[in-house]
Length: 490
Image 1 (cartoon, rainbow, N blue to C red):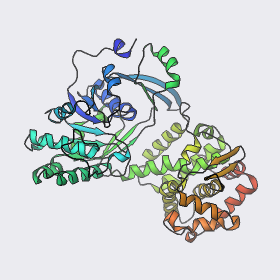
Image 2: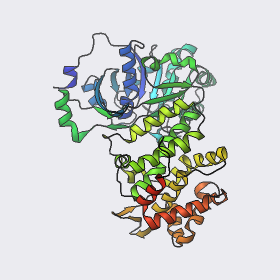
Image 3: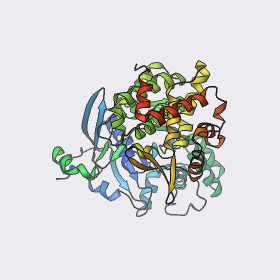
Image 4: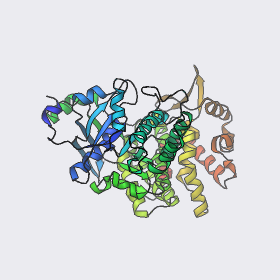
């Protein structure tokens, strides 16, 4: 029995107020789930029309289930393991514009449309000169959006109150600003007129957003057990963690268009999302980067293994609370709450996040996620932190390898592993490790890696040298243990 046969829709369907470009797992477990919660709470009355951004997609499966599906949230929440299934009914239908382009244009002309949400991958927000207004549809998302907005502009003769809230969630910095720039470039290239360009600027809101939720998708290997437990089949069920966060940088007046926070959703409207982006990058992503290479060399394979090891848990906790949080300008309670959530998310028993997968491109990750914390910590306190430099030493140790069949191969006690990064980075580390006694100085002084000469940071070179010596003589696990014994576990 399918979910649509068990979970009937109400006779009255909420009006279609949102167009969503992207029908994949993330948005259905994130935005559409939140909109359903807002409908259920009585603070919103609207549904979402999904649209495939590419020719092959999920429209058929979604429409076969009448847009109804299950979000299965699994993880740790407030210290307790949780597993809860919720039915989402906020999706009205899914359009395939490559088969029915007019259906997309009809939505653009709808007077009740209030917002457009998108997730078309990071590469989706890019200007493509080959896209034309006459294409049905244009291939690129900014070109599609330009057509949609121009159709709306013409339909309502540039009425100010027919502008839209545009919420891209693609994982690029300043996603709204970048999307708007692409749309304006298409408008100019296609000669759509100064009036249309002015309407884009003044009547629509291109919000910059930050989203955070781990969505693990359709659990194919577990579906027999899940189906038996639920009592129905769901071919578009999606699994995710309980945690969710949506930061929207836009004028507060636009929040009335999508009042998700009134339903208890963790949505933050702000005039500057920079501190929240910094918080995520430094605590969540930086926590990964400062710990996973050391944990991998110590013999662990997944994040959960690392979190179940008391020594590594103390190592990570101390780095976040004592070295990273003091460098971020947000209220302490917000920081503590976020840090607690990160520790719970890393401990999620339902997610098998492989440390080796996280190790990809670790040099650029350390530069973006950890180095700013170390620099700010030194500036604020006048001294170096303890763990962030150790994480850098662990990175250098991880990047020790040999060339084998065109791959750069490292070695740990349990075997070999491939070190994956840009070719020039791998070549540099291969050459640097030919002189182990000078490798720290060689790496730290490489301005191409870090954007500056880190040997000029007082005390860092000898500290990293000492950590590398400890790792070599005692092994990574023992070196971390010795380091952790002197750390606070607040």
